[in-house]
Structures are given as structure tokens and as C-alpha cells.
Image (cartoon, rainbow, N blue to C red; front, side, top):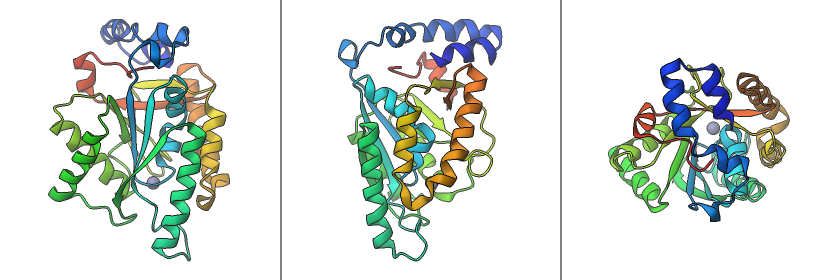
Length: 258
Ligand SMILES: [Zn+2]
């Protein structure tokens, strides 16, 4: 799919040849619209700092995986406790948890909450161990999380926690980084992979608008511009862009299952 564009336009010839060979395996499955039952049903984990981060960073891709029959988990480090002005942490957590559950139903994915607190995310040895156990328990086949260079501390925290779990798991699953509010939050992001989300952008939009407390009428147009821009880069109407761990490429992985 979108990777075709990336192969054609963003890579020097040596990479183009090797990556075309790698990605060739997955492309026919998409073209034929094969459901997961015809291959392996994957556990796809998309880890974000707050309710609305997985949806904005990778909602279209999550919907694509779900539509193919894969098992998609939206993993939230926090419940957005500090994210509604004038509300207590408990009230905001209740509201934002409910919003995340609605968004997940729209995308046909499952929410999981990691139990940290918005604005106070910790990266300690104990938190590394706690998060690793949680992620391992989800038995991921592929994981997406925030790009680590990001102005929000919670985004950086979950990115580091995922990275550490990935290392501890001996890099058993491919790891991809997504972008949110690029320029304002994610910084220095140079995509290696694209997913065409033209067909699922309406679902992504609906899921993002489920986060009513976060002003989707303001944040979604920002992300819509991003998906249109990423689409320009790979000749799709809307696309989501990712940075793959370079080690994924060496291991011969693609964006698994797409
Ligand atoms: Zn966030």
C-alpha cells in the first residue's frame, strides 16, 4: 500500500530494492483484502500518553488492522487526569475514560489503561518493570508508540517505557513511532513508512470527535492537515506516517499484517 510510495520516492536505490522485497509479501494481502483469518491474527498494540493519542497518531491504521480482523489494543499510559480545566483528577479520568471507550468502539479496538497519572508520568526502574509486564501480557506482534522527541513529558515517558520493554523482549516485535500535533508536540520526525488511511479517515475522525472534552473541533483539523500532507508524500488522499526502528528493517520486518 502506502509503502509503495515510500519505496518509490523516499529511499535511495539500495534501500528501495531491499525494502521492496520485504514489503512485497504484505502488499498482495491488502490488494486482495484478505482478512486476518487467512493469515495470522495479530495482536497490535498502540501505546499513547493520554486518551486521544493513539487515535490521533494512528487511528486510521488501527481501523485498518481492525477491519482485517486483527486484535487491536489502544494502550493508554494515563486516563487524562489533568486534561480538563476545572475538573478534579477523578472527574476528568472518568470523563476521559468514557470518551476513550467510545472512541475504541468506533475503531473496533480494545482500550487498556496502564495506571499512570496524566502530567506526572514516571520513568523509573519500577515503572519500567511494571510497564514491561503489562506489555508482555498483551503478547504483541507489532507495537506503535509516540516518537520520543516530543514536547509533552507523558508522550516521552510512554515512548521510553515501550522502548525499554522492546529491548527487554529482545526486539521480538516490530516497533514503530507515530506523530501527534507535529511541530507543536512531535519534533524532528522523518517518516520511514506510510499507511494509506483514505478509507478509514472517516472512522478516525469520528473516534477523535468522541474526545469531546479535548476540543476536537480544534485539534482534529490540525491532524487532518497532517494526514493530507502525509498523503501528498505518498500519493494518497490521507495517510499516517511512522518511523520504523532501523533494527526492524535489518530484521526483515514490514508493518506487519498490512
Ligand atoms: Zn497526549
